[in-house]
Image (cartoon, rainbow, N blue to C red; front, top):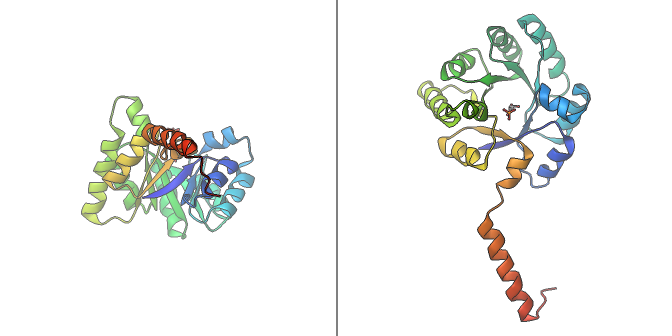
Length: 217
Ligand code: E4P
């Protein structure tokens, strides 16, 4: 499963990049706001830092305007994936932009039927939002599993990009189900390395080591 960083903060991406675990980045208008940066400038910096797809989202609501914005965003770098919302106009923009050779990430997906029609409209990535479904007492992971089954039934090449990930369990469950990609905030990605038994075990080893009076270096 590929790991995308769900952030527009360059320093956070650079820190994860030290381990070579960033396969791509997703941003959205809220994350751009949080970064406090100009969208074109910060997206360019992120594209220079990361080899994989960097999603940059359009903000227009009509297909023609989305296409114009998407073309401008796609000019930032070769690894831009234009992000469009899962509306009828968004699907029209998806069709045009993907036919022109751009990667397109169709976002704000909350049902299997939405994922099905996005794949048929040429989406490179479909972004089902797990956490936001959980927030309204539905099961976001069930949606990932349904889309996996449907895409496999018909050999759709659209990649399932599990989004709105809030917990480390979301990550392992997405991997178990077979999501192609997961995008998570850097704080969640860093938590994947944590376990209280690791901390306890290390503390005990350090105490015993101190008692030996030895040094390795
Ligand atoms: C994905 O592309 C979105 O940017 C993101 O995962 C949304 O997450 P949220 O529901 O936590 O805002």
